[in-house]
Amino acid sequence: MQKIDKTLLLSSEYKQWEESMSETHSPYNSSNNKYYYDVVMNLLRCQRGVCAYTEIMLCDEKYYHLDCWKNGKYQINKPAFIGALDHFDSSLKKDKGWLWDNLFIVQKDINDKYKRNKPVDNILKPDSASYSPYVLLDYNEQEHIFFANTDLDESLRQRIDDMIDTLGINHPSIAKIRKSHLRRIIEKIQFGIGSWQQEESNNEQFFTAFAMCREKLQTQENQ
Image 1 (tube, rainbow, N blue to C red):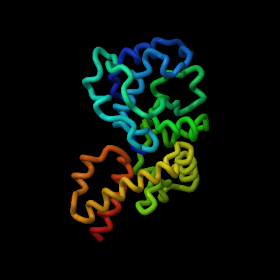
Image 2 (cartoon, rainbow, N blue to C red):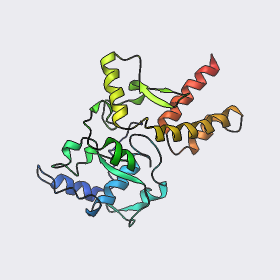
Image 3 (tube, one colour):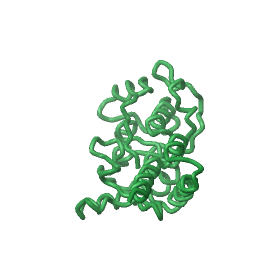
Image 4 (cartoon, rainbow, N blue to C red):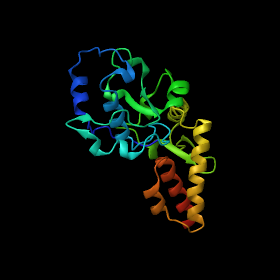
């Protein structure tokens, strides 16, 4: 799960509206809200078009390109994407339903059927200042699943593994797609058809898993 920088606020009209609200936000009404696409597409821009948790691709770059905003407002009517707006901490949804800090775009089934309203631990909140995938996570390049970094103490590892499960990062359907995607890339490199640098420039999803596979396999080659 990549670290996400949410400081790029292209939808400044939405942000001014969000900051102008009192302690309690106006009711969360999803896509009926006038700023729904402003929020969704700005998040997808920050997330590089992928699910915030699983990193599976959700949207073509043409729908979140910088040119899609004008005067702080998103300009495309009903852009094509396949994600859902997720409240990281669902307990904030009632009174802070439009809080930028609590929102991410995720794969729809992960949001609707898997994560839902489960309690969360900020240790794996992808935009938090302390989050680093390369400190907290490790990756099994054979099975293509994430797990807590074994260099950490047991209590931290348990918190991380619990959140990996909560966020659906290793959901079987996602892990299968990730495994197939990265195996194709690795085979191309092993057969000399491409290079890590070339594949990185063309890769549109599973960025963290790609980087961890690359590091592990290059280390093995150099031993």
